[in-house]
Length: 208
Image (cartoon, rainbow, N blue to C red; front, side, top):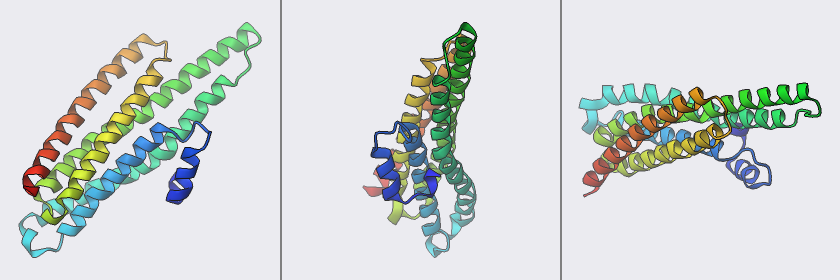
C-alpha cells in the first residue's frame, strides 16, 4: 500500500525506474494534502473565541473535508492498481487472432478503468475546493496562507489528474466514451480553476 509508506519510501519508489506510481498517484496525493491543510485550518479555527460566530459552519466543513481526504488517499493506490491492470492487459499473448482479440478487449477495458480513477480525483477536487473557499473566507486569518496552499494543491491535483485522463482517452477506441469523458474533464476543470482563482483572491485580500 503506497499510502502506508513513509514519505521517504514513497518518494524513493516514485523516483525509481518503475512507471507506477506515477503522475496519477501524485495527483491524488496532492488532493489529500490540500484536504489535510483545509482540515488543519478548520481545527485552528474551532474553539477560538474570535471565530465563535462561524464555529458551527467550520465544524461542518471539517466533517466534510475529512472523508474527502480519505477518498484522495485511497485513490493514490487505486491509480497505481489501475495502471498495473493496463500493463497486465498489454502483456497478454497475441500470437493468434483469437488471442489478439482478447488482448485488445482487455486493454480497452483496463484503459477505461484507468481513465475513471483520475476523473474521480478531479470531481473530488471540486468539492474540496468549495470547502477550502469557506475556510479561506471565514477561518483563522493567521492560517489564511495555508488555505491558499490548500487551494494550490487541489488545483494541481485537478490539473494533474486531467492530464492522466486525457492520455488514457487517447488510447480508447470507444468514440462515445471519449467524447463524453472529454466534455466532463473540461467542465470539471473549468469549475476547479474558477474556485481556485476565487480562493487566491480571498487569500490575497486577507494578507493585504
